[in-house]
Length: 85
Image (cartoon, rainbow, N blue to C red; front, side, top):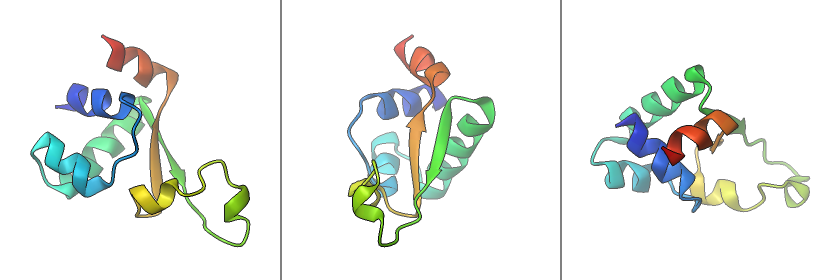
């Protein structure tokens, strides 16, 4: 299941947590737990969105509206390698 999640993240299109859970056939809290496990293993990292007046200058501008929850998950280099296997 973690490998499938890595492949979904590697596909590159931003997904809301609910959509990602539906694709995996699990609940959103389980996806969050899996993402946190992958973060501890070094395969993903969470970018905390702190929206303020400087939001327009943020490199993730607009993405937080798609992903939501104040966290954007991105693959690390190790995660990209693992997803490619």
